[in-house]
Image (tube, rainbow, N blue to C red):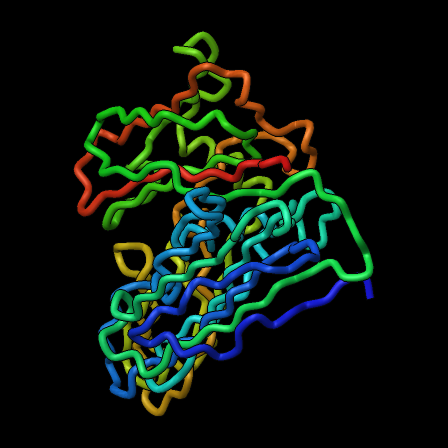
Length: 357
């Protein structure tokens, strides 16, 4: 076999307790780590959900001592997964009481699974570790069970010699202020495969938190990107399908959170619910059952899952086309919020970088 899938952890209980750091000791090249998280909802009906299930994974890190190779939240990782995998995600979100849901998070080290050119070689580091942090209380106060499985997708008989791997990191987060500019100093240590902007406020999407942005090289000597976020959304909408998440709801009126997206909609099976709607926040689904109704099945659909938008217009598969920032002496991302007050606004910048060995 050229490849194998190794199960590193099986059904680990992390309800109110976090696992120890996972030493990465493989001598084979790792193409992907997959985290499969299972959550069992409360037994009571009408449960008070607080966020999407992916919020429970509050931190994903790969470190080598003080050297940080991967660092971001489960939500932001899930948002990146959508763009990296062309929308092919596995989620089962449910507002059904006494029922389990699943979320899969992938840490890909290459452009795609089994990329022979890019992969993680643990032998190049001193003590690489994977660290996962969970917090079930951000999802619901009475989660019955919280477990995860961990898999490593490894090259086996096929022995590639990757030139490097992809790192994923949070650069900076901030609170947008109406009509104000925010300047983020961007790292220039490694080339960029992709650069993401996140923005959200209650009942408002990313074009409010970040209405426009400018990428500025060497103190405005060159501006490779200068665009309104809404216009970029339209361009991406013509190239990518809408995000789709499978959802279930029980036989009682309930509200629960789905992956929040721009232009969110819900499609449910007929004859089992008298009303289905998306809340003003754009991330909460309300299902009102018909008399004698049963479990409701359907999809939440939308654009820009997790309100993350990729801003580098380039060939993601052609490494020669990636944004080489290393020769630059200065690189800044300037973002302006819309001239409109938002409730609980938030914004951030996230990177995928190519790190050579």
